[in-house]
Amino acid sequence: MLTDGGLTFDENGSLLQTFHVRDGFALVAARRAGLTIAWVSGRASRVAQKRFEELDLHHCILACADKALALRELQQRYGFTPDDCCFVGDDLPDLPAFAVCGLKVAVADAVAEVVSRADYVTRAAGGRGAVREVIERILGAQQHWDELMSRFTQTEVARESIEILQR
Image (cartoon, rainbow, N blue to C red; front, side, top):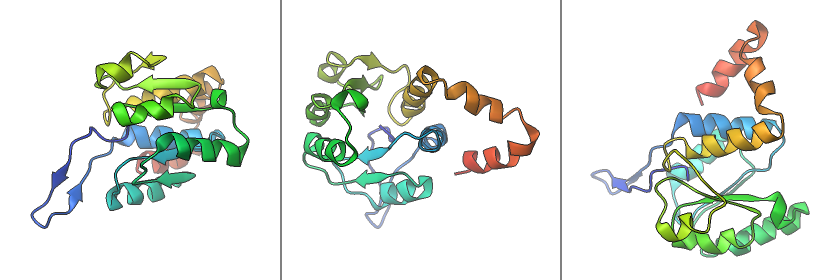
């Protein structure tokens, strides 16, 4: 859930989307900590593709009609089990993906059917830091979040950290 779900079009009909910088920071931190990141969306979007490329994530699957199938293919490719995977969703098309992931997360503004099937519901809404919240919890459980935070207190690494934040 990297956007708030809103669709805004400019006068030429081009889609405009907003992404929260803290979600982007957390995605880069997760990638650097060794997590495999897949961005799976039912909608095609050049804007999302560009953001994906900026963040240098592993997989971007847009216009995905079957999110569960896409996740099963990634699991097979990497040798992951469903328990190795987390999926963050907000609406009914995300429920099949929940069925093939060990950790099911609903964002705070998800529909009731998704919330009721989630293992965890974020405090933040979709596109408003929910992904950051999830990644912080995962990296915290793996003892990587404190390590990341300590990098921000070291002067030598401050410039690299600022570069990450500016993405």
